Image (cartoon, rainbow, N blue to C red; front, side, top):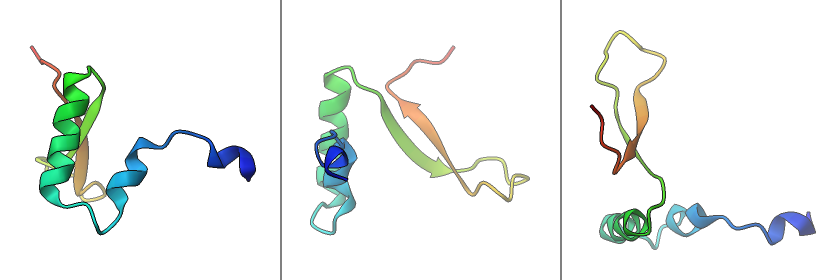
Length: 64
């Protein structure tokens, strides 16, 4: 268990109650500025997939 204590978990900061929506958005903007991968969770646009009510997409990536 002690080996898991020293691993980097950047999402641990945003899982608490003390982080508001504005601070989460700022954290995502800072991560995008650093060139990191930022994921966003949105409602699934395909209503036929009832087993996946939400999907995750990568932000900051240009699609053709």
